[in-house]
Each structure stands twice: as structure tokens, then as C-alpha cells.
Image (cartoon, rainbow, N blue to C red):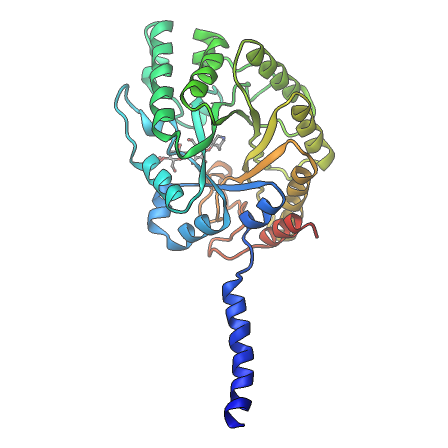
Length: 346
Ligand code: G3I
């Protein structure tokens, strides 16, 4: 009797514990995959290596990882023919170890506005003595990166920010000035030849609603496809510095891409909480996820980071932006719960 009365509650307790331990709450990635959506995050290799809580969240919560900087031209081939793979390999190794897929960001980024903010293209490319040499640099670079990471990468941002950031024209950068739009067609053809299974994207900023930039990108993508570029999708970067766009706007542009047979991914989502209102931020996040879930063409949402501890926006805005789902202590924010609720459909 003694054993029974003692053991029965203990057994009930143990059963509850085993059940709790054996059936952990689903992660964002799990919840999203039940809805046919891929949820990812941008990561940096140095924090994967040095911050266990960062690495644990990256591995647990997200089914896809994007190297925030490690695959970029400046990181992989800063001097012509000198390849520096350490950071990119570290991200790729992490993804393989945790059975995650990679979004290959980005093969070519030459946008003239971004080039004023960041070193995005090595000088030797811009200073190529003639068009043929410049095209040769592009060919060699794309071949090297795609060949090395084709096995672990299933989507590539082949061309990043082809539009002028200031208006709705094709960006007049050093590549387009020298080679015309043909360099983009060739970049897609080459990536497809080297990684035929991968889905290839144009990735662009400030195209999250109807308007001239959306129209300009649709026209550019149509021209590139007509010229033979194998394009499978369009990435909406979605750095929502001033809050989320109206759902109807976001859904409208996503449907437009779907109507021309392309998939659409939100590739760099972040939403600052500049006034500190985490509930407003949470409902904005929820709205973006619900929009993606409402549109068949929307296949992915990738966040531009994991924790408010590390975000490019702190530097860009000059103050703490707190734009992500985990706070600086790696605690879940209201935005995390709002995203989980959106993914659960309640
Ligand atoms: O790693 C070096 C370090 O060794 C060096 O000492 C330090 C000195 O400045 O720089 C470090 O590299 C910085 C890198 O971020 C890693 O933190 C670069 O200077 C800095 O330019 C780089 O900024 C990145 C930027 O793209 C340019 O590549 C941001 O982290 C990254 O969030 C941002 O991401 C872009 C997307 O690729 C495209 N869409 C817009 C988005 C935001 O700008």
C-alpha cells in the first residue's frame, strides 16, 4: 500500500515528465513546415562558434539558414583568384551538422547605393580593364561559389538589388554600365548549369507593395526571363524600418509574382521596435506571417538575424533597433509568440 500510494503519484508525475520531455513544444520551423512554409534566419559564423545560446536557437528554431555575409563576394574572393572560405565553410558545416538547408546569399551584389554604405564588390571587379575581363571575373566567381556549396544550398540569391534604391530604374552600377543587363541573364544561366536543382532568385529591397518599383522589377524579371534567364523566384527583403506594410499591399505583390509563375520569399525580414512597443512589433510580425500564409506563391520567410544582440540595424539606425524575435538575452519576445500563433492559425 505504501509503495502504491507513494508510487502512483510518482508514476503519474514521471509519465507527465516523460511526456513533456519526449514531446517538446514545436519550434517555429516545425510549426511553419506543418503549414508548408519554410522559416529561416540569417546567421554569422563567429557567433555560431562563440555563443552557445545563439547556436542553439539557430539549430533549433529555423529550418533554413542564410549566411548573412559569409557567401558574399567580399568574403569569399576579396582578391581575384584568392578564395577565403573559412566563414562560409563554417556556416555550411553548421547547416550540415544540424540537417538544415542554406539559402545562398548572394552571388552578385553591385547596387550603387549599397556600395556607398558597405564594401559589397571588390575593387578589382569595378576596376576591370575591359568588359570581357569583368565578365570573366563574374564567371569565375559564380562558378567557384556555386560549385563549392551546391550540395548544401537549395536556393540562391543570384542577383541582389538590381534596381536603383532611389527610384524605379535598373541600377546604374559598374556591372550594368559595363555589361548591360546581359550579365544578369548569364549569372542565372551559369548558376542553373552548375546547380540545376536549386531555385534561383532575384532579391530586392523596397518592393513590398504595389507601385513603380514593383512594376519595374516585374518588367526587369520578364525581360531577363525572355532572354533565357532561369529565374524561379523573387525575394522581398522586407526590412520594415517603418512598420509592416498593409496586408493587402503585401499580398497583392506576392500574388502578382505568383501570377507569372514565380515563387516569392521574404528573405531578410526585420521590424524595429524603435519606440520600445513590443506589442505593436508583435502584431506587425503576425500580419507579415499571415500574409505569407494567405498567398500560395509565398514559400518562405527568413528573418535577418536571430537576436536583438546582433542586428545590422543598430549600426544603420544609430540606436538599438530591437528588430528580431529573441531579445539580447535570447529570451522569446512577444513577436516570437505572435509568429507562433500565426503559424498555428490561432
Ligand atoms: O567581419 C569584418 C571584421 O573582420 C572587420 O573588422 C569589420 C570592420 O568594419 O567588418 C566586419 O565585416 C562587416 C560585416 O558586416 C560583418 O559584421 C562589414 O564591415 C559590414 O559591411 C557588413 O555589413 C553587412 C552588410 O550587409 C554588407 O555586406 C551586414 O552585416 C548585413 O546585415 C547586410 O545585409 C544586407 C543584405 O546582404 C542585402 N540586403 C540589405 C542587408 C542590410 O544592409
